[in-house]
Image (tube, rainbow over all chains, first blue to last red):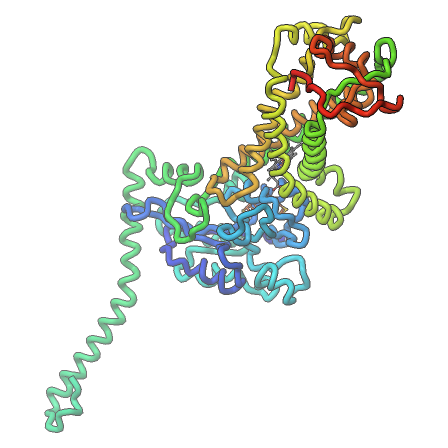
Length: 198
Length: 361
Ligand code: HEM
Ligand code: SF4
Ligand code: SF4
């Protein structure tokens, strides 16, 4: 069984934000939400590094562990999804997530308690609605996995810094790259998301 | 360089132009291939640097990223510039672990102690029975405030605990859809009524502050376990030391519930995720503490002592009850010359318009 993962190669990411735009476009992400973002460390200093980050689809997902209505589930592909019909907008997943993935629909606009259903990256795998239906698209965005495609962000990435797909294949590709460039491997975020030793 | 503009072109100049174009084309192809490859020069450089030092500077870099270093991002959401927040994992472990476990045990234990207490002590009668004469204890405004806050507290307690324990306790029984629908209602109730509870608590604290200032005789009350340990009832004023303890618990611990609740209620105030994590832990711990205390409060007021509820329901208490539980207050009333009235069920004469209030409040 595949375990879908994201891997961002910090030696390649050039902070073009193409993945962010591709995601917003493919999923028609609600205004104010960015399911993916690019963070640059030591910005403007020699040796700066950029990393594109979204939900990492953790193996032992903290969001799922704290959700009071237990609305998260892991698909057969290892993608972590949640059911917006069950979500009560408490924000606990947003507290627990190490990567800041779950977000209130419009953080800047909602003032009072009712904070709406959480939104987060779906690995372009839709959600718990009929595959390819309008309801699925409206609530969760595209279901590219069902069409045999990979997440839009990774497919769009011009430098192939952002990889998405089966974890073993990603690890192989990345290992070859690291050997060729005689650098050190930095499978960024993997120990956090998928546990030690991956 | 448009050759067609000049009709008199000799062959040699035409072929020179052709060579130039070819050269230009080849040059462009070379640059297209070669320029991106310069990236490898830089990679070679960083790799070389990494091997020179004793410690790899990049390892510090990634350690920093794992510990929540801030970077730059074009996304303008709060804290979007942080790659990894480790505290979320701690929050998860504390909330799902010790908080939920010990919280449940504490509430369960308090209920068990109260049950045992009831079995051992039963309902405590009024010494010498009812006198049939009553004095005013709580004004209508006090009673309204008490029940306003109490009802809100119970609603907030039930809805809050549903968020903490519902998944484990209610969901297996109700099924995910029904429980989610209930939880959605619960969170609306909790979030909208929370502020009103805060207002009620504040008014209560202001209104009942003076009577709850600790006095010397309160120590004696505690030493005799509120009269549970020794047969004779200890001295107590308008409120006894146990009630004062409840008041000060509500003051500090209840205050913490309200403050942390408001922090959680408005994620737009600019508070960081860490502050919200800590707030939720404090909110839940303090809630469970106060809920446990309130269990005792309800037990004493309803089943344990005969005559206690009357003061908060009708506002008047039997004179003998007052002498038994709040002797100093009763003495005060007598010194002030307050005349007890016959109890309501004994056909009271029309009440005088203004009756002096107990000095206490
Ligand atoms: C000013 C009053 C209060 C406010 C503003 C408030 C607000 C909140 C908020 C915002 C949450 C997070 C979930 C949500 O979004 O609803 C929460 C959770 C909770 N509240 Fe309150 N609350 C208040 C009073 C109380 C009281 C009086 C109690 C207990 C008697 C209580 C018990 C709880 C519990 C047990 C949780 C769940 C904690 C968890 O799931 O870990 N709250 N409250
Ligand atoms: S990255 Fe965050 S939202 Fe995604 S699975 Fe992990 S904890 Fe859940
Ligand atoms: S916001 Fe929704 S998905 Fe997140 S923990 Fe709360 S109920 Fe679950």
